[in-house]
Image 1 (cartoon, rainbow, N blue to C red):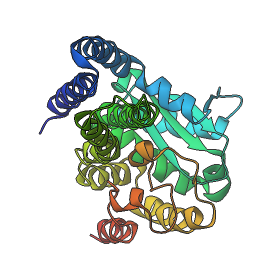
Image 2 (tube, helix red, strand yellow):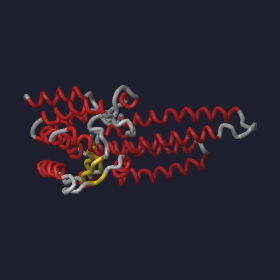
Image 3 (cartoon, rainbow, N blue to C red):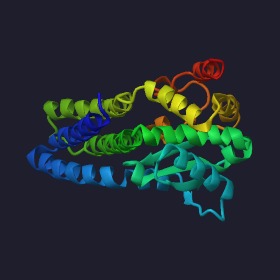
Image 4 (cartoon, one colour):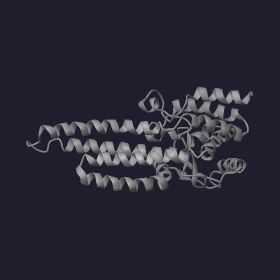
Length: 285
């Protein structure tokens, strides 16, 4: 399935879900939800990258502020014939990175301060080449929109839960049918976050393998990224980004959470060990 088709289906799915939620509040609620969904689609398409970057307090850095980052990305983008993306640093000790934006001309690469401290220059080159692989393959629009939509669905579910509980004791005249409606709203509110995770699963794990392969070729040595992934796997366990929004977990080069969690269960990342094996195989071919 092409990325354009996936983008269209994700935005249609967001509209349908908003309208369905609005229908719980009658016909007027359905119309209001539809108009909100249309506005949300526009915001998601054009500003989802800025939303995600703001979520992590990412700071845009100049060549004088981050000379090594700019030099590496500049060399890689020139080699890949890509426009130079904006470069951001996330103030977090958790080692990680992601790319975002709606197309190569409007793209950004964000790295945490933790990854800058953990990796050497070659390993950092492997990571940045991987992120540029996502930009080259135009994965970033689908990934960023999926993150924004999943976050919106989770927010709506919480609003729905509050609406249900606050309306649960509106008086003695509440009929049995209204009680059933209340339970259906609560059930839907519980299921909505699961729907958000299903939307994330629209992103194939194969995109990570492809970005690994393209990044390894771009960096010039698959072992740069293999070594980085090995360090990142250990680094994330030691310093997980547990305050990260689960709806954005698929955007990072490695899952930002440690241990077993619901977010990891629905992870769009293939096992790090398998990614390293494939890169090592590439290196000795």
